[in-house]
Every structure is written in structure tokens, then in C-alpha cells.
Length: 267
Length: 244
Ligand code: HEM
Image 1 (cartoon, each protein chain N blue to C red):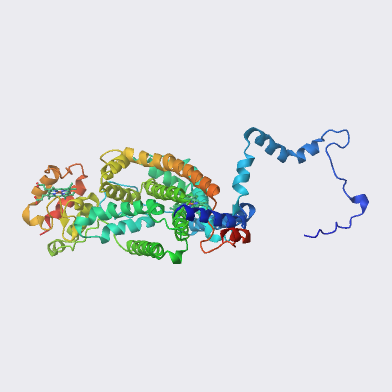
Image 2: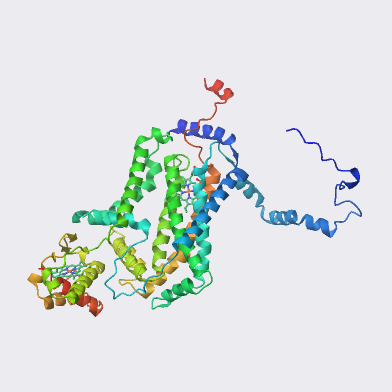
């Protein structure tokens, strides 16, 4: 690209190029401040060597033809982050107590806490958005044949993420402990119980015993707040590692321009 | 894919990738815009649709029709539409389990090198069919009652006895639907045919006290229901004693 000529500034007004060695060779506090960002990054990098990883993640190439369908995965991740953040705020008020505490704490959040019903609404509808996005993302990878060699493992991790996402919404549904939550969960757990082999054990595990009781709620609470989100976060990490390692697919209908050199050797 | 096809794919992919753009800032810009849209949708949904908190959960109520979150409708609906009782356990867990296994193993049985959707007709059509089925089941699930809904016409004898009796009968109907009797008993068209005997005409066979005694002190494998709240227990007995 041709360079534009410098703007016509009178020479007297031109700022002299600054160098730290100028003057008595010491950095003025201003110089130090101007360099602060770089120094911090250098300081951290000298101790962690993370810059390589960041460069590897951020400056990898995405193939030609990458389109909007490829944003669905990161959109899902973003929805998960939103769930995590709004969830933390809800957890500041929530009490897993069947004898009324759970219901009261949610009622308190909904009616009395500043922006409480807004945050609760974001968490509730964010769950729907995340489920929709997971399915759309799965559809994209399915129809693009992105699960084929060499990305089989990433598909398998994805299916686990899908199950975990559904588990989140199933366990979260009970927590407000209103009528709807209670009865829908009882039916859900009973359906689990009719399953083959592990069915009865699974529903016993969820109920924390043969009866639906006080421990059931704390169990759902622990699963919803610690176990599954931790697993999801870890698996998203593995999923993204593989995405960066293998690269995202090109759209299936794209053909590479044949390298003329290669063609010669092939013929 | 055999070794040659794998190498061919990797080479082709290598060229396409080298012709592409760096992830930062091109893909990141798209992803960020998408993230903003997602955020906006969530915020708008929260503002316009809001949240609700129903009545406090009460194990003694009998008037509640359980309903899951909408994205589980298709599972509930599967449970409802598949009525032939011998396949009900199959429908509830069997079909979803099978689908999960098929989904998990997809990359291991669909190993062909072709990736274009229009040249993989079986995969593409199956995918479209599954999506269509899920849409259909979700839609019909949204318009239907709960899976263990118990459809039963209120008998004339009860209607004659007055509104209190009708309400009690109705409460009993819902109590049975939410207590899981239908897992083992057939009541009219509803429920499984075994292991318990059908209760369709139980009122003609056993008097109310007999039914109550059975519920408190049943023969295995039927569990005892003496732990139920008294009102719910009475409603169930009332309902059953009017099935004639
Ligand atoms: C919490 C849920 C998930 C998150 C956060 C997530 C995130 C991502 C991201 C950011 C990518 C990069 C490319 C793109 O965005 O399309 C990706 C790729 C991929 N994902 Fe997911 N994903 C999730 C669930 C799933 C599910 C349910 C499946 C399928 C069963 C799946 C299968 C794949 C595959 C095969 C790729 C590679 C696609 C390619 O290389 O073109 N993921 N995922």
C-alpha cells in the first residue's frame, strides 16, 4: 500500500521522537506510566510464559468461508457465562431449605431485592436461550459434517455438554420450590426411575432416598450450583482446546484451489 | 475414512486454512457481535416475559398438573403419545437412551469422507426428521396435559350428589395422577396394565373401606400409601370407590 505523506505540520511543532535514553538516560515517571501496560504484560509473561498460548489461541487462522453459523458455539459459551454470573447473584440470597426458606428467599429476591426479578428473569430465560443455542450449534456441526475425522472427540465432548446443560435446567427447576417446581420435579424423577438398569438408582440418588424430602432439595442445589457447572466449565475448556488444536472446519462445499505444484506431482 | 482419505482431507483443510483469516480480530468481531445479540435477547426476554413464583410447594395439594420447562415437553410428550403399555418403559427411557447412544457414537458409525449435506442424504434426512419430530412433540406437548394425566368422565352419580362431591372426585383424579398409581395400574385407557390389576371398575368389586385397607396395607409389590396426607388419601379412596 502506498504511504500517505505526513500531514503538513510546521517543523517547530513536530513532537520530537521520545526515547528513554534521552536526557540523563533515566526514565521519567511519565515514561514509566506510558510503558506500564507493556511492563505488566512482560512481567506476567516472564513468570508464566502465557503469551505463547494466547497467541496460539487468538492468532490461529480460521479457514476461508467461515460464516455466521460458526458463531453459535461461542454464543453458547457466552450464554453459559451469563448464567454463571446471574447465578452467583441469585446464590447470594438463596437458601436450600424445604420448610419454607427456599421459597421465601426466592420470593424475597423477586419482590424486594433491587433488580432482583430482573436478574432472576435473566437467569430463567438465559437457560432457554442456552438450550436453544446448544441445539443450533449441534445442528450446525451435524449438517456441516464437522463431527468427522479428526473432530470425533470434540463431538463426544459436545454431547456430554448437551446432557449437562439439560441437567442444569432440570435441577434448577426445583429450586424456587413452588408448586410447579415441586410437582414437575417429582414426575421427572419418577420418569427417571422407570429407566432400565440404573433408572431406580438414579432416581434414588436424585431424591437422596426413597422419599422426596428435605435432603432432595439440598442435593439438587449442590448438583445445580457446584457439580454440573464445574463439569461444564472444564469440558468447555477441553472443547475449546480441541477447536484451537484442530481448527474449525471449512464449510463443506468449499474446495481448495489446487496448488499447481501439487497437481504436477499428483499427476 | 481410510488413511489416504484422511491425508487428503488434512491437506485440503491445510490449504483452506492458510487461505483464511486470523481468528483475532475477524472471528472475534463476529463472535462479539453475536454475544451482544444474545445478551440483548436475554435482557429483553427478562424485561418482557418476566418471572413468576407460584404458590409455595405443598406435598398435600392434589390440584396441581405438573408441567416441565418447555424444552422438556418433547420428552413428556413421548411418554404420553406412546400408549401401548408394553412399550411405555421403552418410550420413557428406552427411546431417549437409544437416541443418546446413537448421538454419542455418531462419528464412529458415520465415517464416510463426504461432508456436504446434500451428498449425505441419509444423515441429512435423518437430521431433518429428528428436528421435525422434536418440533412436533414440543408443539403438541405445549397443548397437552401432564404425562400421567388421568382422563375420566365424572360419573352421573357423583354429579347428582352435588358440587362438593364433584370437587372431591376431581381432587381424587388429580391425586391419583400425581401419586403414580398408573405406573402399575390401568384405569380405563390410562396407565400401565401391570403388575397391579386394573382399577377401572374397582368400586364395584371392593367397598371404600376395602380400598382404604389395601392402600394402607397392600400386598407386595404395591407400596403402602399410609404416609399420604389424610385429605389426599380420602380423595383417592373416594375417587376409586366411584369407579363402577
Ligand atoms: C455448552 C455447550 C457448548 C459450547 C460452549 C460449545 C462451544 C464451541 C465453540 C466455541 C466451537 C468453535 C466453533 C463454533 O463456534 O462453531 C465449537 C465447535 C464444535 N462443537 Fe461445540 N460447544 C458446545 C456444545 C456442543 C455440542 C452439544 C456439540 C455436538 C454434539 C458440539 C460439537 C462441536 C463440534 C463437532 C465442533 C467443531 C466444529 C468445527 O470444527 O467446525 N458442541 N464448540
